[in-house]
Length: 155
Image 1 (cartoon, rainbow, N blue to C red):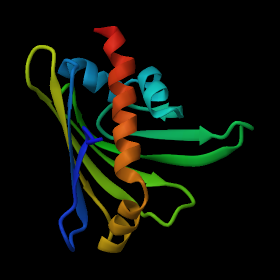
Image 2 (image 1 turned 135 degrees about the vertical axis):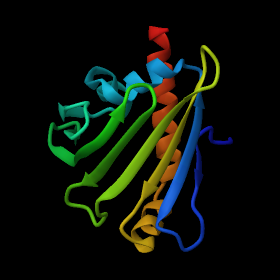
Image 3 (image 1 turned 90 degrees about the horizontal axis):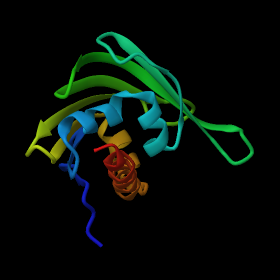
């Protein structure tokens, strides 16, 4: 089955680009990425903090069935332009992956469809390649499918 979320990683580069079209208007897609109640649903994680503003910060935690925290992630929001762009850092605690810089651009295609364009820059080619050896593409596609399914109820 073809993945709707497209990930491009050029040879020997520190970055990847991600593109995904959604059957959602751009304002709902943006809310899905900036409002805690939506983030928790489609990312299946707990939002500890989300300051959706320029120079804000965020922190998420994912727990297992026993309630033990298994993943902590967070960063700083460097810029946020409603329905247009988010620039942030992202870091997962207690993993070999360093801080990455993420630029998300939200594009309105029609009144009811939009596209997410992401550019993610890693500290090294090795870190990027290590992440890509994991089921990153499939996991991201599944998360985006969940985002579209959950948020489409709010159209």
